[in-house]
Length: 265
Length: 265
DNA sequence: CAATTTCATTTGTCCGACAATATCCGTGGA
DNA sequence: TCCACGGATATTGTCGGACAAATGAAATTG
Image 1 (cartoon, rainbow over the protein chains, first blue to last red):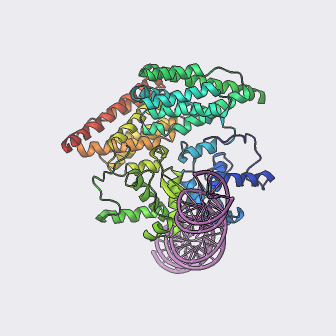
Image 2: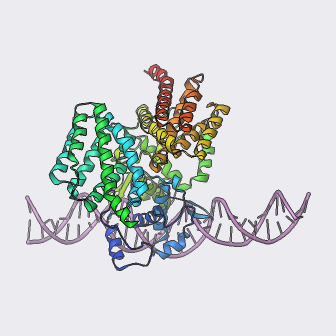
Image 3: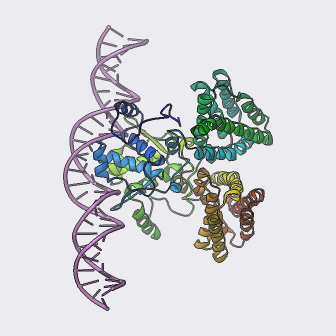
């Protein structure tokens, strides 16, 4: 989940319906219902800054009519966005884009909408900062609390990474599963629910590395070190190993991106 | 595993209306619309374990009819819950309570629904664990990045705490504002969006302290130490001071609660 | 017995109407 | 002139009923 695959550089969403947009919309409609696709489209427009905070959305009648959907479906979409803190609607005034500090930045959907397109550098950095705050401590907790099932799940993740490599989807999923299992092993529900945020950061790391610097550092040793420390129930070692892992992952990401940035300048 | 139902003080939401509950319900209905109150009621029933994960909700027609509301309003409520990961609905099968690991535990609403009644001890402990993971690091970041406005906001919070004390609402709000401003000063959007979680933990700390142990430690020195370190742009000192603050706050909470627990046993 | 088709149930979408609410503005009074 | 008050008005909120789509399960068929 989290990140969609390709649309790195897509045409502007809000414009007239391009030929492919109809097919895409129908394909998405298979899993997300109509209200879900509307919420997603509006959500992307909001978090991408196309609609600005404080701005007023079109009235329900006008909007639903322009999208050729019923007012009920549109309203359900707005409810979803409001539930994620993106908008706030009041009678007589309308539906207003909330200030970014009200947004639920750690909501999995909001996160995936933010990173639907090439992510903002500052935001990606912030996400890594969060990883570096949370994951080492989570690893330490996991070293104390992990069960055998947790270890097995992490081991499965490592095997998958080794077998498939991060160049293919299966390997990337294995990477995510490793980190997800680790967070689960921390035994803290709130830490667990940061999985999607961590996953988003991981996704973009591997995407950048593959695209801009395919021949890069082997990530396996770092991961194995973390695993071994947790298996050995050594919280300090786990903390240190995970800190190191996140640092390296962040370096990989910036190293892969930086040349492009400089070239652009 | 997760949450148990424990309506210590307040009667069950649907139960007999205490004198204040009617007024409260009406007051809430002013801001929350009908669909909002339905979502809240259902949400509380879910996170409190009254509805169990995997369980199927009543059909929309039956449910909306039983609540004497339109199907549309009920559907909007369900969309809200689905947006927060609490339920998942599919045609022909119905709306199913999701597994707790799917819940968005850090969503402000979900959090407030969880802590609507006397909180589960384990969950409160987990929340403090998260605080201890995040807040010290956030304080360190704040020491590096705080602006004068951030400092002023934190100072205002401290003044409010000193003037009103935690015994009154104004003082508690000032405490929250201090921590909120600190998280803002960290400059990290994702850390900032943990404000509600931190705030929930703070609320319950002060509530317990006031109720079970009114004459207790003065919290001002800890807070001032954190403030001074951030003002001095000393990240290590800020980290340490905040770690100490959270430890003390957690001790206050457990000390206040433990006697009651033992008495119950 | 397996593959396929049909059926039934539940959510999903649509339309149209009216109610509630809060802003805005004009009116009347101090 | 300024303020208080009250109504006009635009927008979301709620309602009811109808039909479409999807999907799991039973019935049918080879």
